[in-house]
Length: 390
Image 1 (cartoon, rainbow, N blue to C red):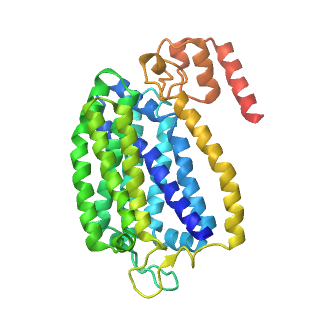
Image 2: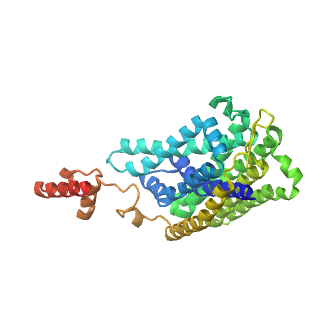
Image 3: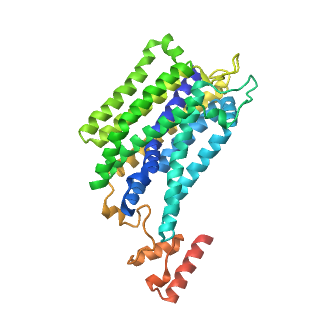
């Protein structure tokens, strides 16, 4: 019973991560194509800015649950998928750095460099997550000792690639809906137009992935055994149809909610088909890792469940507050605030308080442009060094 409970929680954590960080992936992937100028790019950064690092908490939580509740599955999974997971990790790192480094130098070339990193740091993880989960649904070549008999090229099979492309497309749709929620004027209209154009592609790829799932995997065995599970793909379709109806009404927020529901039910569709396997093996025999032979001791699972019942509601409450607080649209007034992401630190005419903040935080600032006197500059740099020492 405890193993089953933790397996359900494991699937839910991944679904929540895809729902929340998915719109960050989508906006970052399409930023080079949808943004027409620097202001619109800054709107996209600020539409993701207050949320992206909190959204990644769910990725860490899902990984932590895998490690603590199913340590053997964690060991085999992270060994077999070492190369793609390492690439994914570096992608997430450069994405995080791009948020913070983009405004350090007042240079178009510098900003374009970090915009490129933002694109790669969103597109590559989105693609690899789809490839990884599609391969888990299909089964990977591991033997009874948990040794992986393959390489990264074997993961790039037709089913894995379709899974990766599907993830990229529904993350992009999810991201455009969120951008429509957070933006105004032309960017808002453009985001809605992109969402309408992406919708049929997501539906088409979903049908293709479903048909290939029937051919390449045995996920439907559980659905034949428990027909009630067919509600999961039906609910996913209903959510996508709901998203299209809301798009027709220009109701971006409800459309985004329907898109989140689609991602939730698509993830649960795959997880339900895997039961009781965590890491299916396509080498036959008893090589697959299940929720029974890969789980921690009952005592460990009980202690973890107690911790989760306390900690998870706290995280949910905090993130709910964050979304409630920052749900407003990104306006020009907010972009001009020195708390905004990608605030042009070296922009002419910045106020003395902003110049002081630049000097204290290490952001790029041109003393010549601001005509600060030498004694003032020396005092500010001394204050900064004193703050760093203490």
